[in-house]
Image (tube, rainbow, N blue to C red; front, side, top):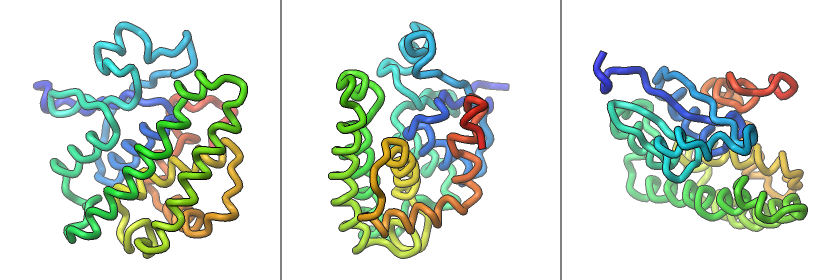
Length: 217
């Protein structure tokens, strides 16, 4: 089998929100893959190994080996999957809706998630819980307002999009850091609807090969 015909390989950590986005996309598009767990806590962080640095110089998950190339950064991976496996569509055809999807996705992937990423929280130290809550809360306050204009059943209208792939893992993080979700009814409603979909269930952190026994669903 040539490298381009080989089964895709996803380097993932069960609780990484960026990895979860990609797992949802792969599930929605029906792409089967082999999973290589990279434990971000064990051995001082397996992402810092020389072996993994050769796969992703940023030493972060996810990384996806597919069609003879290695891709990092979750949105770049999802865009590639969208270009090569257009069904089901994760970016609407309508330019306005498409821009809204990208806007919501960027809001989460640039404006919230990096500020409460593991490496940042480790640098913050003992105040990590307060720090995570502060930045998720300020991000969600704005996101709730935005979604009131764009949402249908999901983040943008009634079709699952790239925005939804970013939302669900971010809500999971918010709940992990004990953020009060009361002020965000739109986010909460959309999240609940998405978690009923099979692709979001199979890709969930509680159902991964590397999920510790005590956290399994």
